[in-house]
Image (tube, rainbow, N blue to C red):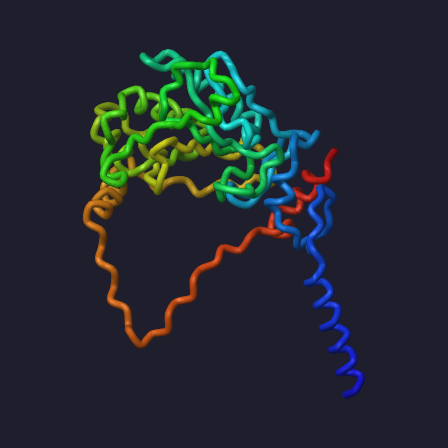
Amino acid sequence: MVRFIIVAILAASLAACQAEEPPVVSLSTQNVNDTRVAKFLFGAAPVASPQQSQSFGGYARGCQAGAEQLAETGPTWQAMRLSRNRNWGHPTTIDFIQKLSAKAAQLPGWNGLYIGDISQPRGGPMLSGHRSHQIGLDIDIWMLPANNLKLSRREREKISSISLRRAKGAYINDKFTPQHMEIMKAAAKDKRTARIFVFPGAKVAMCNAEKGNRRWLRKIRPWYGHHYHFHVRLACPKGARGCKDQNPPPAGDGCADAQKWVNDILNPPKAKPRDPNAPKPKPRVRREYVLSDLPKQCADVLRSR
């Protein structure tokens, strides 16, 4: 009995010491028991790892090795908010941006695209903002027509995109143009695209406007926000080991589902009556990922020099 008490005291003392020790934020790695907060580790990495390009894990829990940096300015694009250092992606992503922006440049009033966040240099959770954008296959594309591709770094920090929504996202506003639809249509028709997130009113507007082949509409998915930019998500590159694809969108063009989103915005469903005697639900606290939550390869991505 005495021996059991001594062991218990020692274990409790050890646990207390471990809890009091501050986490060491560095780019060295530990093992699967590494409890350092992942966003601080990946947010501190200034450049990509010198490895073969690979995406590990899923869009909202993973990292990327050997990322390629999107040039700050190209013939048909500019990367925005450069201070964030989020213009890094898989080579497939960089190629996708180059090709889509070249198509956009052929449209009236557009000289290309303004590109928002892609991923951090080594992917992973971000210090602020997105839960996804972790494996170099997500791209935010601004709704603002890119008619000036000579913006300075400082100007790119100050300029804002434009919102295309009206009535909390139930409808498009007068800033939505056929060119917006053509760009999203071109993005959706690219075989590498898994889905595109945009506000519900835009999806419904495009459903109503499309009079030809509607297959591309399946990839356009209504989602909260996404009225200052649309979000392209690419599928894992063919043969990519360790990259986890999202399930494909449901069959069909998805227009009825988008219309339901719109109906719910205009006439929100009534909340179910709550039992006054029931205990108050505990607030949901989103736990921060630690390094051991991510694929095991992510430790090597951080360590690589």
